[in-house]
Amino acid sequence: MRQEGVVAGVPVEYLSMNSVQSYVFEPAPLPAIPVAGQRERLPVHRIYCVGRNYAAHAREMGKDPDREPPFFFMKPADAIVPGGGRVKYPPGTVDLHHEIELVVALHRGGSDIALGDALEHVFGYAVGLDLTRRDLQSQAKKLGRPWDFGKSFDQSAPVTEIYPAATHGHHAEGKIMLAVNGEVRQQGDLSEMIWSVPETIAYLSQYYELVPGDLIFTGTPAGVGAVAPGDKLVGRIEDLAELSVDIVA
Image 1 (cartoon, rainbow, N blue to C red):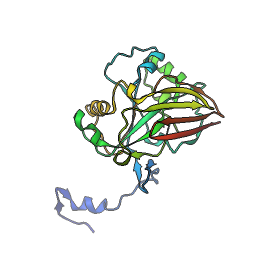
Image 2 (cartoon, helix red, strand yellow):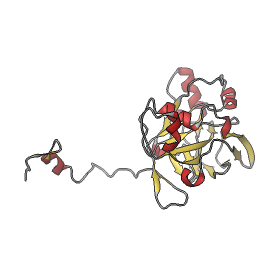
Image 3 (spheres, rainbow, N blue to C red):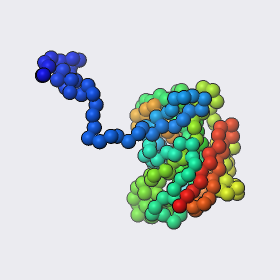
Image 4 (cartoon, rainbow, N blue to C red):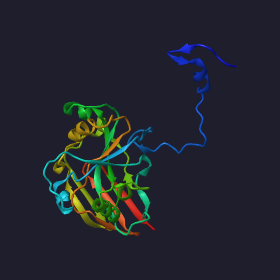
């Protein structure tokens, strides 16, 4: 039966038709990450990644490490692999690289966030891997094309559980490392980031309206390199967590 009238400027007929949401097929599960010490999980909205945020890594990639404005690329939310574990070697590449990173999870959003307020938006921190199809990324760079094929693929963002800042504090310094089959490949300190966590949040919020559930991968130290099926990756950040990933065929 048709209903007449208006509620808060919206026709009652429209409200009645949409009181129960329906879809043409069942939507995919919402990507979410466990939180240390809590039953609740953090739902993931977007994944922003900072490129070349350590001077030594910028040099090994053939770039000038001067403090220019940061740049970003993105991964789909369902690229996360909560807790790490088995990760399939992706198709289309013969040069899959590891990049260990501090991950920042937001619980408050906003635009034009002031530098002094940025840490208030941080829910917590995790250890993550930005897996990269380096050959496809390099091809894209040479052709002046987007990096999506090199960066934004299935299972390209393994991440540990999130450690809330309220109980574990913030992480402006601390050792960060990654070993492959027991051999240390990457090591550095969070204090070596060109752009700090508050600076990254403030800058990014000038271009996007950040929302709760956004993740920021904050860049990787020097030592990135290739991995193959059968390799075991173990990444750590001091006073935070350990991430273990097995690359499988």
